[in-house]
Length: 366
Ligand SMILES: *Cc1c(COP(=O)(O)O)cnc(C)c1O
Image (cartoon, rainbow, N blue to C red; front, top):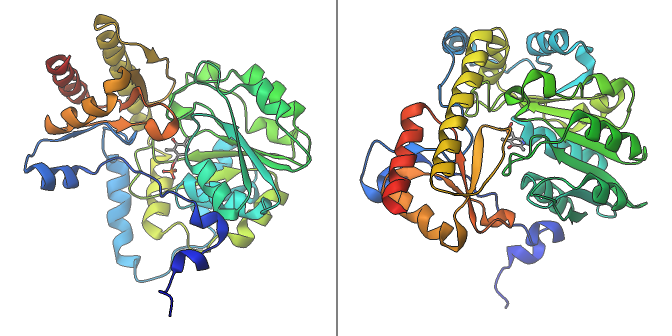
């Protein structure tokens, strides 16, 4: 008798998968080291914590939690549609935008297809591609960012999807609206272009692409956004895709009807009305970015210029060691060796005192 082997029974794509490596939770480090007052700058979360309007909306929702959520997310979609000037029927809600990215891949990509993304791009793209058994095509980056010409050149008959993160995580690199538009215009219609704008709110308004406006021009374009970053709802899981109605209809066929729960629906709907919170998130981020950049320049450390809420800094071959030493000083940052960036660490922007804690710990180490 041979031993039961679950691996052999798993789908071929799943066998080779390595699970997503999340940032180390504060509670885990507390348990391991027996220390408190830990500063986590590892998952690009909003350091402001939940908006007060969201807290109130969550409390209001508690009494109804024995009921199923609204499967259509009526209030959230209506509000989003109004903001984005699209029809509610063009929106697909997700349990975080990660969910939306997976739904997109499962809707359009089969094992016979290729999926294109950039080297150093968000790890969810290869994950969802491989899970389906499709072929991932990682196009070498230029200056850590997307090489759009090379990505266009990589498209074949078998290509079914292209993922672009703008700004990209974990590099923070940013594509201009002009370059992006020219790229999408070049992509043939048998390829779905997924434009992941998780950090859109941190981009100065005058630099933002009118990506949702482009949907009228490009039927094969999908824009994904999230409430996890500038809106501060990472723990609640809320994201969405905007697309043509036709694509949204397909996505909604495989979307779990209750993928956004009642609390995340209420929170996302409420936070859209909290413009002060959003402005404060961006202001805190801008100030923190200046703080981290000043530290890098003072210490003559290279960093990748970022339009996100994080800065990826080059520490050389000792990056892994520095990560561990920072942990012992109660500061959690994010190793990015898994993104082919073994000499860098990604530091999320925190409140001023949190950034200071990182800077102080680094100065002791350097
Ligand atoms: C954080 C992030 C997301 C959003 O993840 P959620 O599932 O919405 O929390 C999506 N794309 C990129 C590039 C990200 O960095």
